[in-house]
Structure formats: C-alpha cells, structure tokens
Image: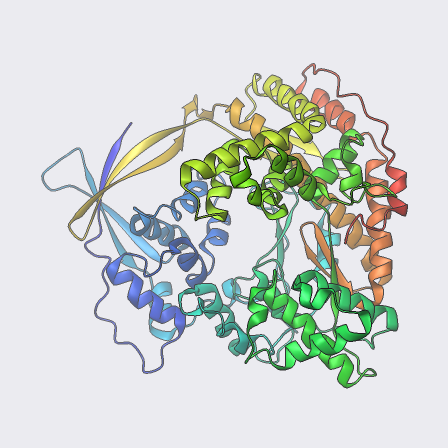
Length: 611
C-alpha cells in the first residue's frame, strides 16, 4: 500500500472578474472551485451536470489507462469530493497538473493544479463546449457512433444510425412547470434543463448515441434534455413527427395518460369523461399542482397537454408519442432464456394472465405480506417489492433490498427496515428460484474461464454484437490530501499486475456475468425492433427496454416487439454461448441447463407482453 501527498494551494482562482450576466455553469464554477466543496448534497450530480458530464468525458479517455475507470466512482464519495473533483477535472482537460518533490520530505510529492484555458473559458464566458453539452442540431454533422470500453466493431452501426434519425424539439409547455417543483432551487438537473431549453429555443435536433461494452445504447448529449433521463428530461423531448390522431390513436394517448398519472380520481373515470378531465389538468397545471404527486408527473402532464390539443382541434396533426415498456424485462429475458413457465403468467408472457390478476411485483408483495407480523403488514405492497424483484435479474443482493426498504420507509427504525428488507429478499429468491439454475451455470462457466487467466469474457449476441465484461483484482493505495489546511485520506483502487497483466477477479466476474448477459439481450431486442421500424419508416424513441412511436402506430409497434422477441428466442442462446466460449477460450464447460416447456411462439398472442 503506497502513499502520496497532494496539495491544492494553486487551485483557487480569485482573480477572475465575472461578466455582468452569469450563466448557471459559470456561477457554479465560481462557487465550487474556490471552496473546493459541493454547495449541495447531490455533489456527484452537480459536477456531472455542470461540467459536461464528466462521466462521458472519462469514458472517452485512453482505455489503457487503469486509473480512468475509477475516477467516476470517486465522484460519489462525499468526504473526499473536492479531491476527486479536481482529479476528474484534470482527466477531462479542465485542470493542469504539475508534480514536484516535497521540499522537506523525500517520501512525498506535491501536485499543483491550475485551470486550463478550457475551464477559464467556461468560468468567464459561461459557455461550455458545444460538442460536449448539446444534441446534434439540424444541418450539423452527425458524430461517429462508437463502443465505449468494449470491442470495436461495425455490426451495430447501421441500426444505431437509423435510431439517431428521429428529430426532436423542446416541449416549451414543460419548461415553466419545472420551477413549480419545491426542490427546483436545489435541483441542478432542473436548472440545466431550463437553461438548455433557452439555448435550443425552436431549433430541431437529434441525439447522438454510443454503446457500452454490452451493446446498450446511450445518448451522448449532456445538456439536461434527454430521452433517457429523468421524468422531466424526457417530457421536454418532443419528436417533430406529427400526424392527425386516429380514433384508436387517441385511445392509445389516453391510455398513456392513465399509466403515467396513476391517480385513481382520473384513471377510474368513464372513458367519455377522461379527455375533458385530463385537458382540465393541463389547462390549470401552473395553478393546481396536484399532478406533481403523479408517478411520472412531467411525462404525465405532457400527455394531458397533448389531449388538450386534440380536443381543441381534432384535425390538427400532433406529435403524440406513446411508449411500450417490458413487464420486468430482466425476468422476461431469463424466462425466455431458460424457457421456464414458473412466472410467465405474471410477466405478460402467457395468453391468459394469472387467475388472481397479480403481476410479479404484486404477487411477491402478497406472499411477503402473509409472513409479515401484523404491525408491518401495511408494507406488503407492490412498491415495496418492485425494485428488489426488478433487480433480481441483475444480481440484486440482500444488502440492496435492506437499504431499499430503509430508504423507502424512512419512518421505520433502520434495524426494523433491514429485517423487513432481508425477509423480502428471501421471499423474492424463493419465488424466483427457477431462474437460479441459469445464474449458477453461468457462474460456473466464468469460474472455469477465469482460471485460465482471462479477465475479459466475451460473447456474441443473437444479432452478432460482440459483448464483453472485464473484471480484475485490485489493491488499494492511500493518498493523503490537504485541502485548505484540512487533512484527508483518500483510498484509490489500482489493478494488481503480474508480469504487466491484471489478475482475474473470479468472484466479481461471477456476480456480473448474469446481469451483463441479460443487458446484452435486452439491447439486442431493442436493435432488432429498431431495424424493423426503420425499414417501415416509423420514427421512434428508444430507452434500453422501452420503445415509443406515434400513438397511431402502437399496434404496429406491439406486433414488431413480439415478433422480434420470438425470432431472438427461437434460438437456444444458452448453448450458443457455451459453444462460443468452448471454442474461443479452449475450455471444457458443463452442459447448459435443460430448457423448460414454455414456448416462445405464444408471445405473438400475448397483448400484455409490453404495455
């Protein structure tokens, strides 16, 4: 374990004279840099938002640099946020580092940091580099689509280029409503979105994309308006494609409002009364703010506004897009992968749903409620079970379930919340036990491959994308930091190298392989659906495991989603992965789990598969 001492005496920039009109970025920079401490509790989000998504900047660094991947992690450490922020600024090109020998102690070195012209420009002009913060405006050259921290390849480029063709505009109906949120003054992202709307105005734009090592698609823009972002960020993105709503399209739009509202005083109204009720909510949105309590308030109020537009002029073409979301898509993929019917009737994967009508979240909650003591039965509800069940496919842990319940019900004593979360985790695992066989098989295969010295494990998805995960052992280095006279110690992780090569971390590789394969299959399904819709000329919006098209084309989207899922899982993917690994890594692997009796073809007749 090594040590290094750092000093930040030259970081403070107090000679800058701010211009009379300061932008939000400039104001934040002037507040943050001299103090070297976050003004808000949401420290990581502040820095990520204000300085052009340092996550993305770091991800673009030289992949051979062992330190770069860890810098993003440090942004979340409250005690050492100042030190980590400066390091991140350096990696992003905002700060320059010069290292000198300590004047009195030869064991230590001193690192001096000074702002680069890039950061000085942001602080004095309030303008961040356009290419880092903004989407691609109409007429601008589209950036290259790349795989970050994965294997360079071209198989995906045609599909992603098609996805990127959807043109957007800012939903200016939403912008003034952001300030109605009681947390707006403390919400950096809200400020960013407001500023972005003022910058974009009426210009049309597209989003650039990149893929991660598993093939999941992410938006590159970091301007605070994002189809993959928070509720209000998505609500501010309106596709420019407009069409007059058909009667069925209007019903689809009403259904969208029901889903995103979740208010029974509206969702249970007779069908003929709903349009006027939703339109009235939109008309009074700035006065009556009850809609802020909805499940997805800003996306929901945006749907209400579209309903209001339609009522005012049914002949007017409008940009009413409706989304389709998987019913716990991770478990849907696991069920199809193993062809097990253990819970398919609760995932929209059977023609007839479960007799009790409960989805998988409600079912787990109900079973859990049965074993809860009387004084805690009130917590046996769907929202309690949703996250622990949803994340099962992605290697959820007992600890994560315990912390989730503690965060969800802050009124509970933490020890009580942890006990409840632990019992919920046990119940979830009991119900989802049929999936465990597949998880364990993957772990065994990874153990065998890692034993051969491989830190990188790759596989080929059904559409030909080569996905990869990298897990290696690390050691810790303690760095002693002195910030404005106050001493800190920061623990940094570095890889353990033997003959210049990292050592496989078998445990982490085992825990990660299941989630990463499921993520890669989720991404594959999205690309396959995207390719079909592009061939049909239907504009769409894409967010990992959800899809959105104009309300008039929902029936087509539903059909394509089901057809492509069937096409993907008509293959024996588990054995294809096994065969690839045996050939690529030259190892013998155990037989893949025996497939169950569930038939993927029935998905074609399952209307609730995506909803």
